[in-house]
Image (tube, rainbow, N blue to C red; front, top):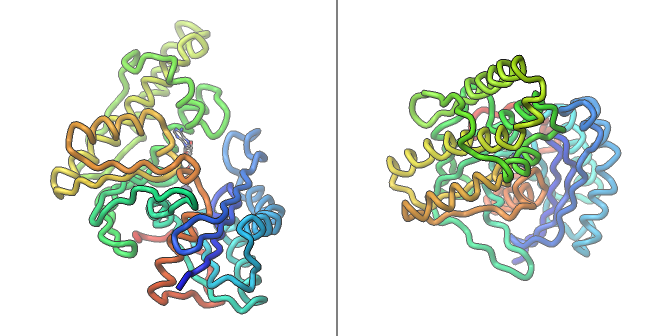
Length: 340
Ligand code: KG4
Ligand code: ZN
C-alpha cells in the first residue's frame, strides 16, 4: 500500500514542506530566509517570524506541486528538534492544526536522523543508490559534526561528535572574520577553488577517539589574520582565495581523518555524508578520493538534500510511520535532543 506523507521542517532558517509517496519525492519546497544576511548570522526571533509568514504558502505549494489534497495524506511528519525553539514551535503548531483539521496522524522526526535518511529518497524519474546496512554517516551541519553508525533506518548510534564547534560553524565563523557574507560555507567553497590549499598551515586538533574539535583551528585562523593584518592591512583582501583554500583543506582533512579511523575499526565500508557541509566540493572530492583508495562505497547526497529540507523529514517520518510510531497532539518541540 502506498503511504503519502507531508514533511514540515522549520528548525533553523529554512521553511520547508515536501511530499513523499513511500520514498519517492513528489515535491520539496524550501523558502530560505534572506532576513539574516545583514546580521551575519541567524537571529532566532526574526527566524520565527519569517517561518510564520512562509509556512502556509510553502505547505500549500508543496501539496499543489505534488497534486495531493490534505485529506489524502496518510500522515504529517514534522521536525521536533533539535533546533531553535521559536522556529520549531511554528512548524509544530502549524502541523498540529493541519492534522487536527483533517484528522491525519502525526509523526515526529529528529532533524539529525532526517539528514542521514535523506540517502533513501528516490526521485520520480530516478532510483538513487542507497547505502547498505550497517553504514557510517559523517553528519556535518551548522550545528553538528558526528560520525553515526546506522544499523537500520531507526537504529543509529553516535560514535563521535564535536566537543566544541561544528564544522559548519568553523566555516561560518572564519568567513565572518574575513568579512564574507553569511552563511560563509558556500562562499569559502567558491573562493577556495581559486586558491592554494597548502598556502597556510593551521592548527589540527588532537582529540581522543572519533570526536572532533574545531575551536583550535578557528583560533589559529584568527591569530594568523591578526598577525598578518598587522604587517599588511590588505592581507585578507590579497590572499582571500589562499586563506579559503587552506581553511577548507584543513577542515576536510580533520573530518576525513576520524572517518577513516572509524571505518578501519568497525570494518564498515559503506560511507555516507549528510548535512549542509556535505555540499562542500572539497569534502565531496575528498570522500570520493579516500573511498577509491580504501575500497569504500561512498554516498554523496544530491545537493538539494544537503542543507535543511522537508523531504528528509518526510523520509524519516515514513520509517516511523511503518513502525506505528505516532506523535500525540501534546508533543512539544525540543531545542536539544541528546543522542538519537
Ligand atoms: O544542515 P544545514 O542546512 O543546517 C543545520 O542543520 O545546521 O547546514 C548549514 C551549514 C552552514 O554552516 C553552511 O555554511 C554550511 O552548512 N554549508 C557549507 C556549504 N553549503 C552549506 N559549508 C561548506 N561548503 C558548502 N558548500
Ligand atoms: Zn540541518
